[in-house]
Length: 434
Image 1 (cartoon, rainbow, N blue to C red):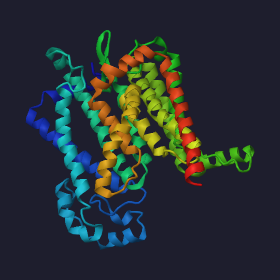
Image 2: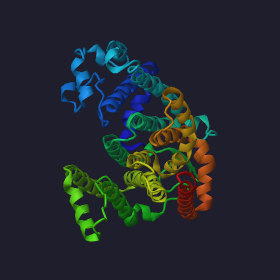
Image 3: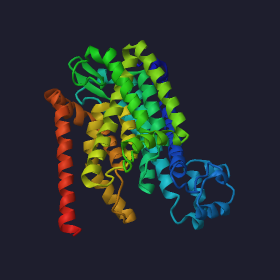
Image 4: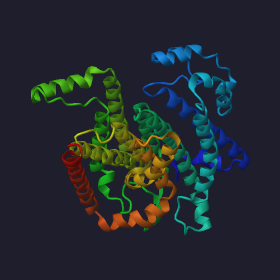
């Protein structure tokens, strides 16, 4: 049922419970340590608190370079998750009080969280609550695979969230590898997607849910759509700024020049060509492999497309950047992991999560400005945890009733948002700023 994952998942489920708990704890600690490494090194302004890198090679500013030069040598124990951060308290005079608390809590949270999360998945947290015990037992290999897939997503979202908190930006170094990972795993098996109810029973929530699969998605039309989505994603990662001050002819010239100005265009070109070849290969294999890949691609387009559309509309209406492009690539990555249905739900649950996040952050930091990336990550977490309630009991029925009208409803909502933001800007300009 799980394709190439059948044997390793069965071996995992047959392991002694104590061994699986220990492995999950270590897995969580390692993921937490990697997240902390990413948070402190892949940001715009790296902080010299990471015990895992050679500080001499870091591109630090003058103040942080001075701090790095004063650091004593780090030992092996300093690099051990949790224990290392307790030992590094000795560097408080250099980094500031409490610098070690957040990374320590991240590692502990993922360590204990993975153990709890794995058990919740096996107990049917994501499955319809009316499922019988025999069906639940049959679904455990599937839910175990979904857990590991989501554990990687959670670690990526943790890293993206705290960098966004610190710098109001989300690095491509997180979202691009995360998106590629999701596409590759989805091409191996569609059973990495969340469970949904169909007339035929419980099945992965692939792109056709809640309707039956149409032949077009498995044929040439689906292949063409997949190539367009992939090409658009790669193009979106390039430097696409258009300068119209000197007319369209100069704008096109500058646009093409900017595309190839930075050496990264060669990497993007290589990724695009490799992706075209890989997508074509999976399409010719067909079957479940193509269904998994096209589902992930459609999720990428939906998740990133929603945020991109809101960014464009909001920027036009307010005459200022409404949302960073890092939010676009973040939600594209999330969509590649969870599909288009969960991407839509996560977007609408993000404002609910924002209420709690803003309050907690304000109490801790007294900063009332919070970037949107953490909201999206929290909305995704809520969507997954309450999946049966938000999808099977509600959104699935809504999609089935609305059908193609869902697209027109979304466009109408986007237009209404543009009008509302435009009116708000005019009101501020007329009655507040004047």
